[in-house]
Image (tube, rainbow, N blue to C red; front, side, top):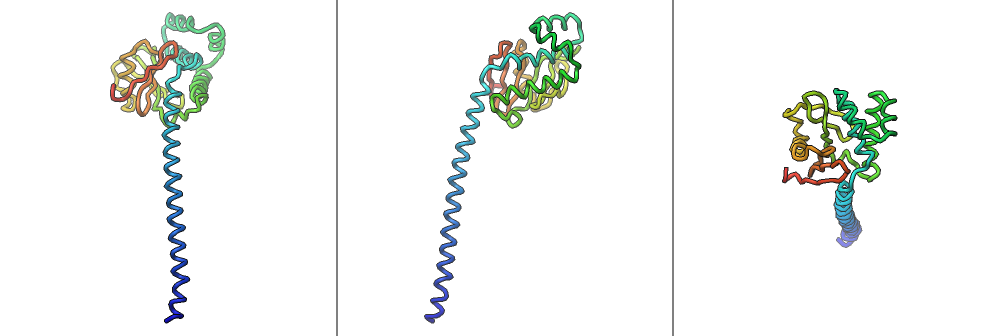
Length: 200
């Protein structure tokens, strides 16, 4: 009987040790998870703060370039060109449509890369003015590509619907950025007006 107890004791001790190590591991994981959550929450708050900053002149120029691509009336085109500085107008004149689209995409992505914001994880896309006859806006993806042109009163994809409401409220804006939790209306001077989803 004594021999049997001696044989059991080491086994029980090993099991107890294994249980204690497992508990320590769970505690470490829980602590790590809590820290990760805190970091994630802080990172999200930092992103929100950065996205409220005014947009750059280069970013605003992206939408002037898009306006020119979608304009069909010579008078409108000339008026849009007048809004560009001389250097921008000269650069634009020597580019093909494909080169302009790639330039638009590059500038668009650089704007958020400089903020160190992973824009594709938080932004649905952007709505901005369209000059194609019968259309009032076009949608741009979070990758800076033109998704579609929409006629006045035409329904936009559901994920852009809040942006359409904000766009209609602020027809003089440069564009409306549509996010998971809000829309950000970008004014002509780059200032940002944030509208929470509950107000749309």
